Image (cartoon, rainbow, N blue to C red; front, side):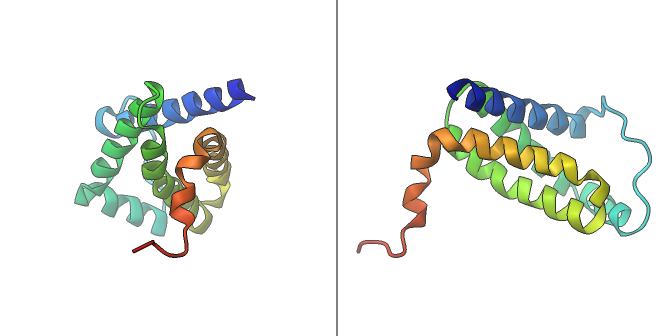
Length: 128
């Protein structure tokens, strides 16, 4: 099973590294923006520069996952990005939901070996 978790971590890192760098260098041409509200949404992300901030975090966390350093931190940072990917695809482009589901599954598999790092987050109260 350790091999499965390691492969999942590397695949997750490669996905975010490639697509994060693509926001800066545009080596994978994506074509025209989608029509309707999805196009407006992505247009606002691009025009405001917010997409570049998200891409920065995608690239940095992908590199951390690849070099196997600060893996729990990288996974915590990627969590909200993956949630936003899934929510955006559910609400605006359900035909691409498979991509979000695959990334979410890879994140779960990569998180499993370091789950003990997340247990302190589940405390009801903090000891004072």
